[in-house]
Image (cartoon, rainbow, N blue to C red):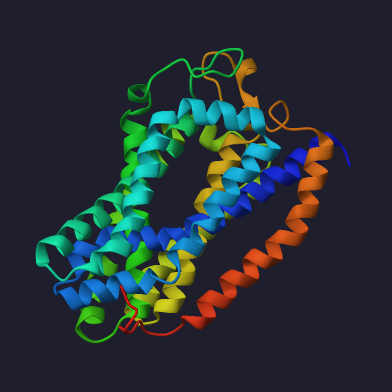
Length: 342
C-alpha cells in the first residue's frame, strides 16, 4: 500500500472520529447550552443534567481518540495546528473541564446559591466549547498565515473575523437544536411539552444561520467549493444535507423525535464531511504561500507507523463502538432521578 493511499485512509478515519464526536458530544453540549432556559425547577435541572450523565464522558472518548490519531499519524499537522490554536485550545480545555466539574459538583450540596453557580458554569462551559469549535472551523476554512516550518505567524485575534465568529455562532445554534431534540426524547410531562417549542425555535435560528453561513462561504471563501468541479459527485452531500434539514421540522410536527434526531445527526455528519472536503488535502492551509500548507502527505508519519495504526484501529474501534452501543442501550428510555443521580 502506497504512502499516499495510507494518508488518505487515515484522513478518512479522522473524519469518522470527528463525525462521531460531533454527533455524540454535540447533543451533550446542546443540553448544556439549553440548560438554564428550558429547566424551571431544581428537579427539572437535575433531569436535564442526568439525561447526559451516564453518557458524556464516553462521548468525549471520540475527541481524545481523534487527537491521539492526529498526533500519531500526522505529527507535523498536529504540531502546526496546536501551535496555531494554542490559546483557543486552552480556553476549550477549561470549558470542557468546567462542564464536567459542574456535572459532578452540582448535587454535592442542596444550597440554591451553590447549585446556581454550577448551573451557570455548565452553561458557559458548554456554550464556549461549541463556539470555539466553530471559530476553529471558520479559521481553517479561510486558511492561516504560516512559515515555511509550519509555525503560525499571527495571533488569536487574527482568527476572530466576521466569518469565523459567524461559524462559531452557527455551531452553537446547531448543537442547541441537536440537544433540544435529544432532550425531548429523554423527558416527559411538562418539561417535554416546553421542549417542543424550543425544538422549533432552535431549528429556525439554525436554519437562518445555515443560510447565512452557506451563502457567505460560497461567495467569499473559495476553499468551500474548490473540489466540486473536479468531483461532481460531491454535490450529493449538500443535497442530502438540505433534505435532512428539511425533514427535521416535519418530524418535529409529527412528534417523531427519534426521526428528527437521526436527521439532525445526518446534518452534522454532512457538515463535517463538507468541511473536510473543503480542506483536502490540507490539514492547515497557508494563505501567504500554498507551498507552506501542511497537507496529509507532507505532514504524515512514516508508512510503517500508519500501517501499525491500522492494526490498532482494527482492534480498538470495535471495542469503542461496542462500549458506546452498550451504554446507550443500558440507559435507553426516559431519564429518571434515583439515589445516585446528579
